[in-house]
View (tube, rainbow, N blue to C red):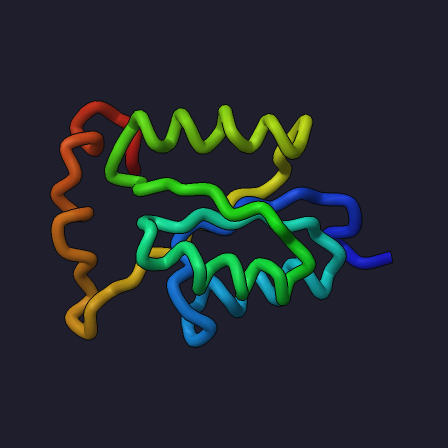
Length: 115
């Protein structure tokens, strides 16, 4: 039995098949997890949907993690597909200097929502 058999995982931050998020998603799928994906914007939706299909998933939901309301809507929408969630993999792109830009200065950090 695979170590993630029957587990449900949400992949946040997938942008291309060259991203770490894709490697993580592929490994989780190989280990038996059911996957759902987010797309940050409409521009990425078709690309993410194609990669989701390659992972035997048709769940692609919009979510800009910079928006609390979009995060709340994501989980409300995910309830339409699954009755529970076991794993979340949030992969963030970093520049060569190790910074993620404005996300390091996200005002939610001061409210304890990001650590």
